Image 1 (cartoon, rainbow, N blue to C red):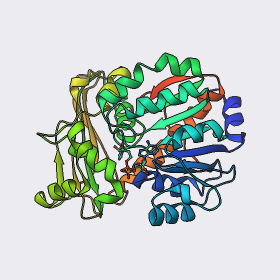
Image 2 (image 1 turned 30 degrees about the vertical axis):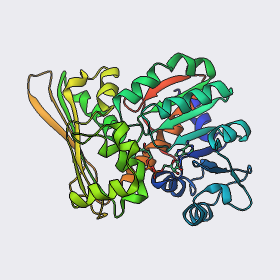
Image 3 (image 1 turned 30 degrees about the horizontal axis):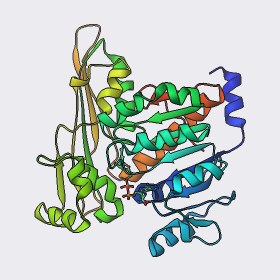
Amino acid sequence: MSAEQSIVASNSKPLRVGILGFGGLGQAAARVIAPKRETIWVAAADQKGYAYNGEPLNPDACIATYRSRGSLGYLDPSGTLSSRSILDLIQQASVDGYFLALPNLPNNFMATVARQFIQSGWRGILVDALKRTSAVEQLLELKEHLQQAGITYMTGCGATPGLLTAAAALAAQSYAEIHSVKITFGVGIANWEAYRATIREDIAHLPGYNVEMATAMSDAQVQDLLEKTDGILTLENMEHADDIMLELAGICPRERVTVGGVVDTRHSQKPLSTNVKVTGRTFEGKISTHTFTLGDETSMAANVCGPAFGYLKAGASLHRRGIYGLFTAAEIMPQFVN
Ligand code: NAD
């Protein structure tokens, strides 16, 4: 972007933002975005309803309604109950960009939502925090359709994939060849029910489980499993889209990228420090490792929602220039939202 264009972008009117999915991440996203002056939060949807009346939404009121009544559809005065909340919202809301804080259960759910946007004729920016490689592959198949529809879709823009993948792409620049990218995450949440989809999707990575099994598990079955593990999920060699994103960005073959971590569902303190280690060979022939470690005080929600909106802003500047299609967190730099 030229200096002149960048001034135009930062001077343009605030982005009207929507949040689809109002669970753990959706609610945190509302708190992250509401105080910003470059964005106005105007729309949100959950499985049973949505909130929209063209005016800015109040996070406290929305969260209180969702927690007490189970859906934004009960929000007074801007809530509407609907069993097809996403479609209804797309059709009537004036929104520049949506953060898709939706569960990807089943594994093709996000691609289905993307198709709904394409078919609706809506134009704008979409951002997801998808995790699985196979889910990002499904979106890649929609790339040209997104382009033709005038949608700038930013995928894999949470923490991992997302912030850590982008950090790996940056760290790679010191090397002539990348030997390995090793992502290790620590997540601490006081109560698994605040992040049901995240925990179910993590269970799907455990040996002996898959996405179908995790989707079908009742809350009581999840609770039983967590009882047996003392609330801890230890994950190794996960199918995580950081690999395909770094491959697409030309950084290294996907086999060199590994992702694992530990999730504690009973304490908000992280069980270990989240980090990415990028090992490579410099042009002088030296082998070295760059390590990027997240502060232990930063929550999963902070490390997912901050980048998601940073990529939404970056997507908006692409969209404004007529650049549509599918982009990943490893190929575009997020922009800080003020
Ligand atoms: P959650 O279970 O707390 O909330 C899901 C929300 O989506 C609920 O409000 C639910 O009503 C809504 N929803 C479900 N189906 C819907 C539908 N058909 N239409 C409209 N709304 C619907 O979920 P969460 O724990 O906040 O996780 C959201 C996603 O974020 C998960 O897919 C998770 O894997 C992902 N995530 C990504 C990262 C990352 O770093 N990339 C980190 C954490 C979580």
